[in-house]
Length: 410
Ligand code: LLP
Image (cartoon, rainbow, N blue to C red; front, top):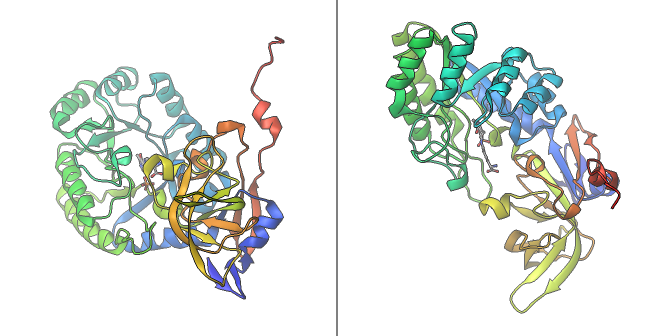
């Protein structure tokens, strides 16, 4: 988003015009930014067989999936529905990594029938899988490396008290199961958490994976999960992808030499690819001064962007209707019937009713975590590509609220 001709524009398109054309609240995605991020990641890893498996859950519109596919990525799916969505978007089964947790064996069977790569994260399921498929279906094993890292407790998933993965301390047990059922283990996986800043955390994860990998014959890939940190606040430091790329590529090459085969290295970025591409455009309904704050009430809320309330996440806000004039301090709130703060105590160009605000970093875990809470409609989504705006999801209507309800005639 840049200021050109006194307008906030992306790819030459004025955001206030998009708000007028499509209405608010509106999710807008800069497709070029997503393509650029894929390139940055591809270029950061040298001399290794990198496979990017975009984390579908971050933003799952089929057009976004098609866009990243065109850029050469595969996908990571965490539910059978995501698997089907990715296939619908054109991914071949072998490009899809299926990493569920706490799902039934029937769901695994469905995934096997669809032909995707299965990633198992608990020993009972591994045994079940062995009983049923033996060595006929290749499998990946998700390990919990016991590394405490990530933006906050809800998104730190690689520590000792996390439900995810099989404890690295249970490796011996895993090996016994693998041998007993003659499992065809082709990959090992770790995902430590989201918002991980430090290259050292990825290196530590790598060392743990290498140690485990030495115990397996016939591996084809090691999957390091996602979690690269992107900048949300001004002055925020993001993961230095070049540094991670350099250090991990080197360590990986050394390991492959020792292992005696050139394995693939997989990453599953969500935020890194799509967070910064997205803006949630909202309209100011009311400005309400109280003894402690001046609230700006907008036509959206935690039903559309839950990150500020759920993770205490910072999202930048810009009054895109005002380029000049003084700034004042506001707290931007949504219209939901409980505390629904989008941004507290922020300086914005003086706000008036009807102004459009752009909420930044809304690409990842924005729409995909949205709901109909308060029986509100979910927003439309627009993808900007080659200087053109494409409507990729229509705004919901009242019919959608009623769609699955059954009137039993009371
Ligand atoms: N791989 C696996 C197995 C994951 O569980 C996740 C995220 C990712 C990859 C992608 O992580 P990323 O690169 O996006 O950090 N809703 C939260 C984030 C939850 C992440 C869950 N797993 C948020 O809005 O911060």
